[in-house]
Length: 250
Image (tube, rainbow, N blue to C red):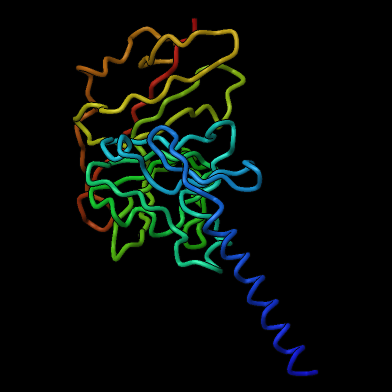
């Protein structure tokens, strides 16, 4: 009798584990949405970016959407819970052309997701007050992240972005910041962000001052030239210069 019960329990446990593994891998399939492959969970209440489509692999710059098909994008990579049952927790953002990726504040990145994108140098994201190694940084409240690929995992070096785009109206969110970026001093801005939206208004371009007098020309205008100074330790360092652009509303 005990042997029969023991066998029954083993069969039951194996059956449950098989169902759980199947649920984790077999029934949730990748779908293609624009530049990304996506998995939807919880009856399409959450979305997880798992890779790039063929079209996505050809892009130098990518913007991670906050929603796909009306569903919130939770992470770049599988949901962390799946790592209990499978070694595939990260996404496979595989591209030798991708140089920079922009992510929303609320989207997390599972380590290892960019291991096959060797030319990816920067991940850019607006951050409010952010903590690094126990220290709080809140200057400008915006940061970009330079991502270095080493043995398939990411090592983050947090630096301040040098290009800021502002909503430019009184009830704006994110302390007025709409978008941030980071480009070489003395060079052009090579990526134009998606147009911001404001109810009852039409976006009229990016300008160099809040009064919207001089429009920024992405074809010819350049960032200020790099400046250096000697710091307190006697070492030469680059002086931070922020280029601010303001939205015009019509």
